[in-house]
Length: 365
Image 1: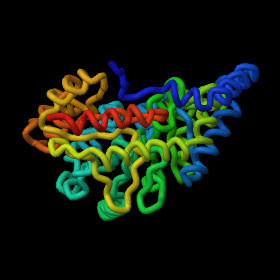
Image 2: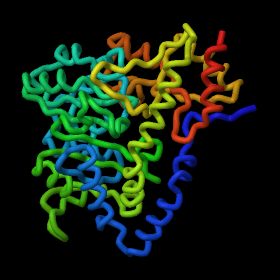
Image 3: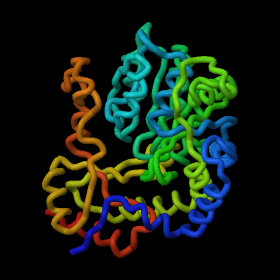
């Protein structure tokens, strides 16, 4: 029987193995492992790729979000609007700063419903956190107009959307600040944890760089109570290699996604849609079906592995039961949580395996 994983990391590594190995040895031989040249170079190169002025490398995507909320001055008594079907890290970043997450239903593209944001705005609302979920850009024109109308800050959670665009402009360049994760499974993934905060605001960039390094703006001088969250030199160096190939890697995932979109024809499957003027980098290929458990069992029997992104909305996790949110308040989120299923998509998947998955889904009865 075949064993087709939902995601594989080894094939993309092997494609550029010599470059990765040479860079790792170069960094090891440099004897500079924290906040050295590799991190500095990566910050400049990633900022240039996106089209922003500043970038700060940090230890994880969650830290990037947590620091972003902090440097915008959001805290106790402040409300931050965030979509209800996101990964919990988006919400944790708000809570870790003692601010209050306010949940909004998603739209048909799995991103935040712009029409529903306005309903949740109160005098305590200070920011909107936009999550470009599964790799697809959100409707940034409408969101930025809302932020302007109500004087709100905008945080972009681009953890899954490196290189995605809205009207030809990369996500991460619209809000006051944007955050990226370099967790290994991401399209721009490291070989361990990592993250980045990007902005066009010099003051916010300086605050991020200070806060990530114990609150220090120069050695042994501490402006505030900070944290230790730094992108290490080996991860930064390896990310520089992957960044140099990022468009090729994205194009490969788009070929896989387009094959699914063109060839899956089972009426019991709802395929993902891409919004007009938006692009997706297909971090995940997420279908929906009301018969998910049956489909999972069937695909497992064919040697095809799948993942649910995500089975439990953040407000229903044990960590957030204290908020007392009624799941009936979010019927769309609940529906998605019971129906979404991620199909295999990764760099290096063979045409034969891809066709096998498509045929298996089309034969599901």
